[in-house]
Length: 245
Image (cartoon, rainbow, N blue to C red):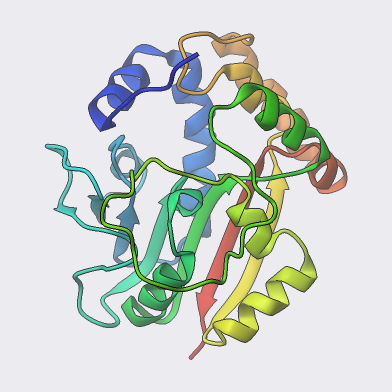
């Protein structure tokens, strides 16, 4: 099955699919809860949804859309130092060619005590099988995610590796290596969750194996068991970084 090809297509699916909106409402609530009070920069806001949950947001994407405040690349952000209290990315990190470039930019743009809040695919024993068989984006656990180098101007912005967030933050050793590379950014949270409802919803595809009325009660059950089962069954990874004083 194909995924939407551009931000307008994502927005159209969002408006037409109630199950998707309910699932993502819970995900956006997690993001907003993790943010500090203040001004937020949203990177990858092509679907244009975060502002419905948090009003003081500057929404950007690498591709233009009418509802965006700016068009820019997460690896080269055109904002002044210490401009923001939060930087939010929802399913963006795993699309970046050079993730280290983004974290350098985040270190520059955040005020002391500010946060990077990222919600991404999480690679676990169960989700890796599912993503490998049923998702169009690859999972490459061998990529050197700390590598730097020139950016390819011809690269498709939708190119991806779903393993990138897990390679950076998936266990304590990886988080320590990240903090050694970016000592100004402290890893506050790296939580794996979303056990079944998320994959069964079909995401931005047209189908769903759960009804709208099932989403919230099933999600509540998942959240109860997530601390125990998330590392094995989780499909999502919530990462919160905080800029040290």
